Length: 340
Ligand code: ADP
Ligand code: MG
Image 1: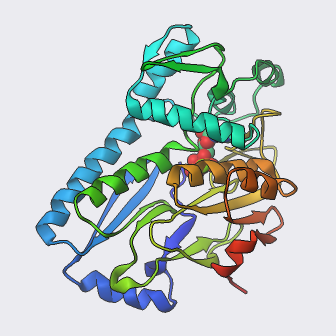
Image 2 (image 1 turned 180 degrees about the vertical axis):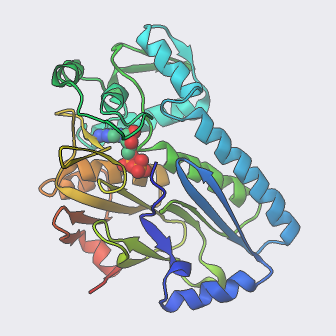
């Protein structure tokens, strides 16, 4: 899985805010840790607490995120795989309150996105080879298999949840929260450290991030958004306290065959990898919504993303199309400084 990053924080680039971050790094009350989770590097910065408190909070946070990463992994052994096996064999299965909450939420997001965000198409994603395997010798999947799966219309609306039991009316449903669970997990992580008294924090999972409060010294977190088509930055984004920033793109994880690239985001209507949008960045107070919405906007494509953003109550979004053209929602104009 790619380790490249969609956004990078002030520390990485030589503009104004770096100086702040650089000075802060030397300060005793700024603590940083880095782990490899969710297929990416997760950087955590917390400030305003003692060294020993920070150590125990970061340890608790690491345990929490590791657990979520394991439990909600779309295809490795764990809770999610057990659920998918139960669905395939038409058996009911018990789910915990987080899973029940996530499934309720993704049903709403599926509806609001007009079906473009569809975390029930795990089988289609797997057929395209995005569940493990290597890129070597990869070839496009059989069209008839994809067509059959799409014809059975797997949807989170096929799921029935009652008193902690889950079942699906459609055995072709395979739940893949790859476009959502990272947002939910880092939101849980943020809650955990906030409950312990942390007021300023940043959890950055490979460019998808949540903030808590402001950066050290009260400045807003400034986020550099990576250019989807070349090295470096396309824009600076200013966040206000508590916002999450999520970017989905067709440029990071993809397969290649016959000179064509096949990105890992699938249009649920056709079963085909998306085209038209190179990256979509969403800023929202709810990290899980931001994660799902960024995926949905990429699926929506250049002609429809504004409509889908409206439907999802997303005011702040930036889209870069396949030709590198940038579009912003009206509210995003005030937050973004484009390069060049
Ligand atoms: P990333 O995995 O890079 O954070 P996304 O948040 O866009 O990017 O999630 C992409 C993942 O979501 C895919 O790897 C797949 O597991 C899943 N997925 C693919 N297409 C869709 C879709 N239309 N709706 C919901 N999830 C999807
Ligand atoms: Mg997403």
